[in-house]
Image (tube, rainbow, N blue to C red; front, side, top):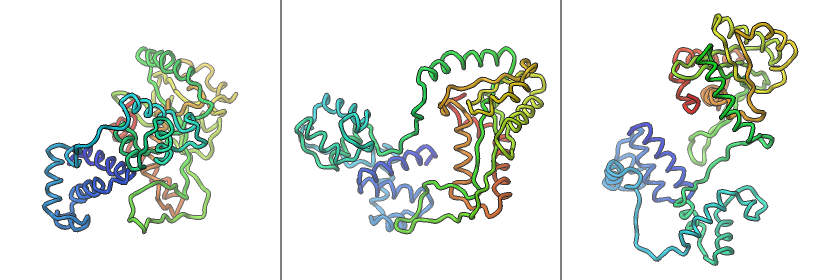
Length: 345
């Protein structure tokens, strides 16, 4: 089984779980157990089926993928909802429950049952509605955050006008880097992870409030390059020190630095230091409240998942050492940078 197939199975596993599709849940669990090295007889015992049944699922998956694990299609009556009604329903679900008149931001199956009955006069059970939503390509998901002050027009102008101009300047006279800062708590952070049902897991946390502060910059494209620096504070002085580091490294090649609008990036001492260095470095500011346009955000996310999530650091130096190792990995393995931000290439 390839890594892509494993990820696909895990995603379908979560969907089956959300839809309470026990049969599909068990079939996928059996395949994943075998993939993890369990003998077929052991895996079959764990999920409560016969070995030949499990072998049949494996054979069907190898021949037809996820579709081969399905039970159907089964003959049945005509759908109570027309294609047009299903299309309209999909639009209402995508727009959110508030647009449909509900005083909540979360769709649950009983609410959709009520919506369908009121609008179309058709009664479904919650499990039937869940299957309909799944067929319409919906699944239970965590939302992504979107700042309320984000400016869609400014972001579009950045993508279509400012960024192409910066990249053109790079081709003519320099390099383009994305810059950002991040703090990593010694007390760690918490994230979802696999654990035994009914048992769970715990993470030790030291009673401290220390955090490692890191400034970073990344050059993307065919030859990604990572730069970082531990700093005691995020302020104008530490930012200038990092700018000096970048200027020294590129040694006369102009640096086009894309960064956000945090106040110390625009302090008088920063502007003063930049004077007379226009041929060495130029700052380009992203639209306000648009972190998704900064490549560093995705590298920080990958770093946090690898380092402080669900980890215990008894000493502050342990955290800094782990972060330094991750930084060295980014520096020595450009592919690890490229795979984290493929949409910026």
